[in-house]
Length: 395
Length: 111
Image 1 (cartoon, each protein chain N blue to C red):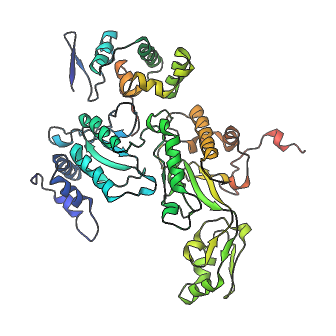
Image 2 (cartoon, each protein chain N blue to C red):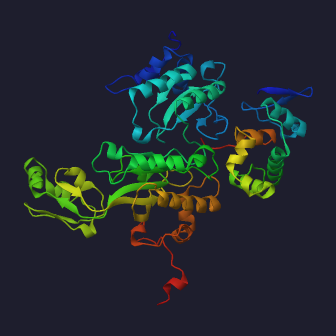
Image 3 (tube, each protein chain N blue to C red):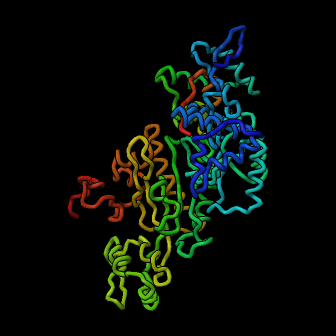
């Protein structure tokens, strides 16, 4: 396809040493009329400072209520290639591991039915395919599903669970994030494909508190690996770091959020009872420090981006849960959370907002988890948990 | 705006095929829209459509799926009070198909 539009404003975004989505779109535009018109419409948007996408329509594939997000141009006559430009979410494999063969297969099918533009990966975690028409949805879905792929979640539904690369590449993973993510995806298939929730619900699984999937900020239910034992210290390795330029006091001791580390110039010691397992010291001194003892996960709830009310970070609900196949305890807990939320939430109210509105006590009673000190969200502020009168009578 | 022709009348619809003027709706139009998707409306289908229309007339908004599922469960038996059953009746989904046949405006869901 020949060049159709002059794009002086978009061209600016190709300057500099960074990768540019404009360059990639131009490559796609050489082969696809849809990508070509998308470039034209985007340039016009930049010029006129307004968007030309209409509110998402309702499109999808038979049997599913989600996975496809309708996009229509409000200038279909000017840019016929993007008159329909629906987004398709493909459920990514746990940890985003693909073979090159699989990626080629995905792209080949996409070239056949869509614009060729992709987004690996969207902030939901899904593999995102950008731009196809309503007529192409069914054949596209048939072809992807015949190769073993499935659509991801969208709308007011369970969103595609996602996880960090976990034990596949990282020795600090306390849980098998990949397996947990896969199992949760399988267990919640109905909720994922047939939206019936008040709003979205996201699960993200991180192997440790470094939290490479940002689960604490971006998942309604954050599952973060942790451990029960002490942090094992190799003092020789500590000295190695000191000799190689690390300022242990400034970089480790003073950065510990619970001030539980001390260092006398030769020996590092950690007061494990006061350690919050934040991973800071371990990730700075990987050769010297190592978690030991029982491994499991902390289950947190509530984070969301700032739509409706302000953004929230997840807070602790279950301080420690042993996570082993078949993960029934985790599934049961999530189902109880969802049930309470589903019964009580207004449309478009996230579970974190509902807990803020109703209080922790009601939430904890509904899911059958006892109140514990670790659940305190903001210490020394207004109490997040309100006791009942009968709780206060002396035994 | 696109149109569809029905019983000699031009009926205005939006890009997704939802009728624009709710007064244009009639049971025959519902049958017509369904037949275009290859669906013959049975009593079970009408149970959903009637509930949607009653609810809309009362509250001026389409019900949440959860409410629809519960009501259908009450009317048709608990084994049918789930989203799977709704998708068996309306394979493209209750919002996309049932609301459209019922003449409700397009539900504005989040992506």
